[in-house]
Length: 119
Image (cartoon, rainbow, N blue to C red; front, side, top):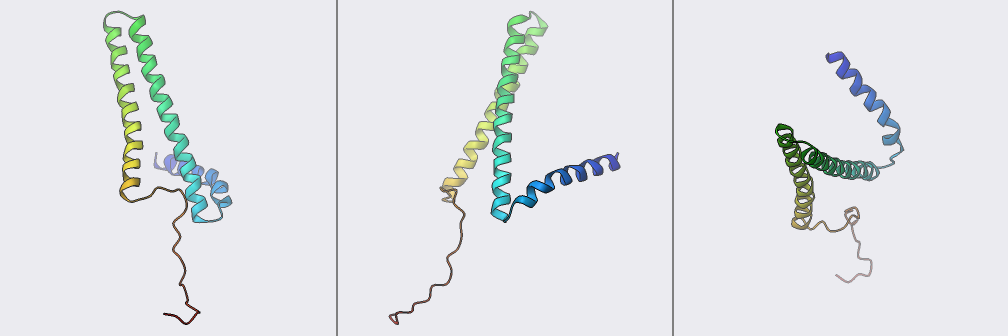
């Protein structure tokens, strides 16, 4: 079992290696990870909405005990949507708390040398 997990992790790392090698700097790598995570969040929200509507279809199409199962699926879909949107809210709160309003990289300025002779 460990061997299968280890080999699948190695296979995933090898398949991602060209994407990481094409990133020239750390900022490029972080931008690539940011793009991947944003797409993943959108995918999860879409999946949660599909689950909610699947539960709605189950609720409307069935009677009795299966109707309760549809209601439970809808509840799971609403919870998933709430969690994903809350993650966006938490990230926005952290950005405003730490004054991160721009997507520009934070690069410290170099040492400024006063060459005019006035101090």
